[in-house]
Length: 252
Ligand SMILES: Nc1ncnc2c1ncn2[C@@H]1O[C@H](COP(=O)(O)OP(=O)(O)O)[C@@H](O)[C@H]1O
Ligand SMILES: [Mg+2]
Image (cartoon, rainbow, N blue to C red):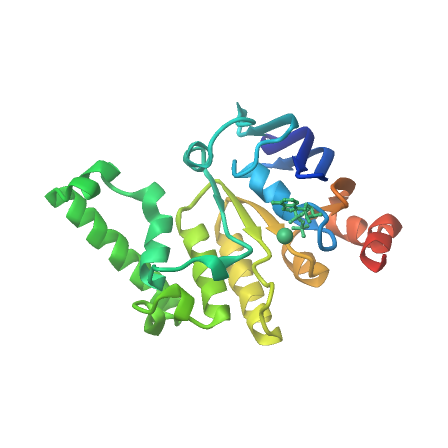
């Protein structure tokens, strides 16, 4: 099996916190892997390391065979890693439609320079992205929010729009950071069904970060558990989630 992502002995020091502590873990290509752990376990830090927002203080990160330990986020995105944001509430000054269209950048039919220079090809590409983003919002029954600034959309809509932005790029590796945090029970179950549909149709590798183990259980056959920056368990989801060491770190 080819590895989509490999972390080898990765440590990340943030201020005086060791947010990841010598974590070695591999994510196989095409696998749907849950990343679970209590608050502060290092889950978002792992997402940040895989997408290049943080660089490890020790260890190596490999994406599809390429060492990206020191790579910037744009380079890692080019290599086919897309990620959603845990704190989508901070995104401002962009409409829901524009935000989804941003996710299409990796599928842009012409070089971005055409868009920047406003050439006819660039304008056509922009129209394509807008139309594509609009039809996706329609499919999700979110078309009425297309022209609404993201900060003015209801919280649940913002989460959906961000997940959509992440998925539409058709990245080879998708990292979703707490797609259900702050969602109601109904929204959570809608998100579950949406991701289940999407994963059944897509060959993408999925790293699904969530502290809701029930949500992970429904979508991921493999899981890894983190606690206080350390890898506690990795393997089949059922085994990881029933591992007494994992249960202990959730119950404190
Ligand atoms: N920018 C930062 N500066 C200092 N410490 C941080 C920073 N970001 C996260 N941390 C700390 O690193 C640890 C792991 O955080 P995080 O990866 O966000 O955990 P999780 O996503 O599992 O809740 C926590 O103790 C958190 O307080
Ligand atoms: Mg987090």
